Amino acid sequence: MAEEKPQEVQPPENERTLAMLVHLLGIFTWFVGPLVLWLVKREESAFIDYHGKQALNLHISAAIYNIAAGILSIIFIGFLFMAAIGIYVLIVIILACMRAYAGEHYNIPLTIPILK
Image (cartoon, rainbow, N blue to C red; front, side, top):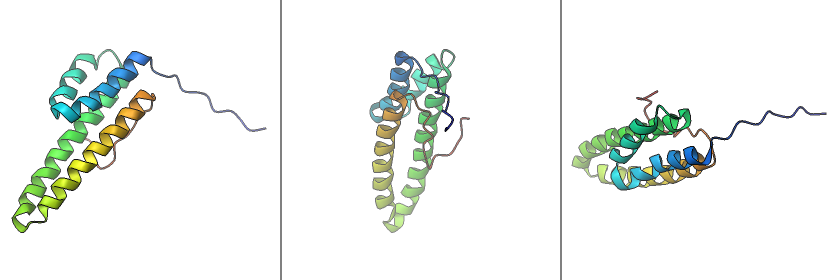
């Protein structure tokens, strides 16, 4: 008989909603919305703290990547990189929103872990 895995405790719905909102605000306010919400709620919930750090790491990383792409725009390939970065960030934010609302700790790929 196979052993059953212990179920993880699901964060309350309000924490899941706020964690999702941390990511979603990034679409409309870049890093400002996630930063404000994370600063206000990070002490109240470890789940929101985790997702806030992930969202901020994503936006900081995207800014660094866009600066590098801007430099590469001199040889015209940077414009393609900027478009790819924008599409990537949008897709990852949508995935992170879904995972946060599902109560999962989603580690966003290709980000520089500045906030740990």
